[in-house]
Length: 552
Image (cartoon, rainbow, N blue to C red; front, side, top):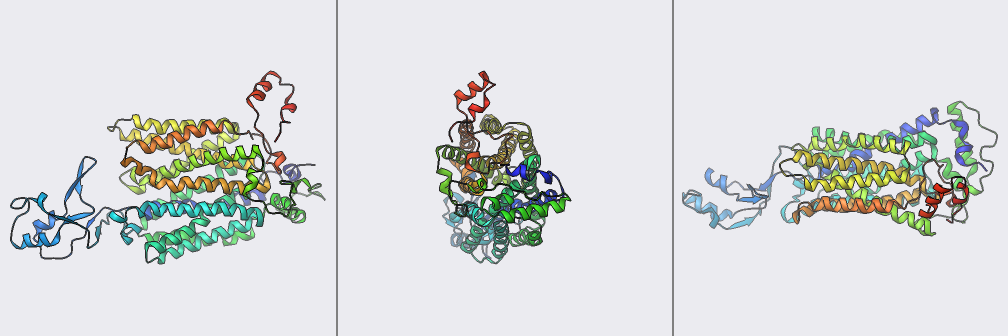
């Protein structure tokens, strides 16, 4: 029996059909780029201080009513307190001069009972200034991002299961619709609670759209084009959307306008329903052979090649997933059914958690890399272009396992090295941080392709969705990771560096998938050779077949 790629080899790898699928699927993930990180600008905290209502105070007292505090060795106006207004008003009425006739250190203070005054030098408004997420409610600012990534976590998990049951194409467009509609509805939020509920729901469709497009492209495209799509195509499309975000935010400095600008472009993707096909691999895995052949024949017409009379001669094995009936639903427990799959899944969960924690922690902290948050965000996004190029080169020419190990080790080393840089060289610290971001991003590009190559068709989207859900746990904690610096300044980079080194060691035990066709069944999954087998391969190059017969 021929495998899927051999059966559709007559289509070629880069005909009109493959070009349409390649570019349309890449275009479908562009909104994910600026949608995923819009929270960088939506939740940024403008400079603020206590609001002083219009009362009869002299200018001298207006200038000193906000106390001065020392933060990180620098003096600044207090953000959360002021001198008691009734006391200051009485002293002003008596004509007493502050700091001359009155010792300011003896004056009682109070919280910002009248609200806050926010600087508009950078933003017209953010949800922080809109809903006063400062001082006692400051915890709500990072928690907003956490709730968003919780939505992403749930969406990536359930979308994988739904995609394996109902198809790649319906889930792709359903998640695009969820993302678009609920981002738009957020504009009308009248409280923080309403905003985060809608943000959570929009997160359900955010990365789910990306995963569905990624898996669909991997199952339709073949050979080098598939590697180019998974490692460079969708990743650069995501990075392009990320780079567009600071441009949108620069000209639209009100949070509602920014949400409107990030939701409306998705309406342009409605016509894609008639151009993007369902995955023939998935159709075969569900026993729908006639539909799979019809899809491939339509592709042959677009490529102007003649299809054979019978395309899939023997499809019975294509439906064999875990010795279940082809129509029976697969679920996440199939990822734990046998020991090799359990081991692979456990290691990939750790690797994905590490990559996601590092990626989102460094990305969400972009507003602090440079005095201008728009420049910072663009630099962080631009670093992804060489990163994805690096991952494409690694996927094109290097085995997967050593590539993953090397990327994690370099990322960990760069994050550890930041602690050794003296404070007088902030540019070097920024460069090392961007190197860490670049390498970790390359790891994500490699990880998506590696995941697709390790799991069979009927479990591929479930595996991708489950691993992405686990990785989103890292995204959920990432808004709080940099706040660990309050207790020990180098702690955030130490945590991320340690995770990277531990994950690099674990990745050494993953199976190799370089140069192999995508598995259709569990029996075709790549298998990890033991250390003894690796040495035996070097001593006995004439007996490779025996090594491939190790138990699943």
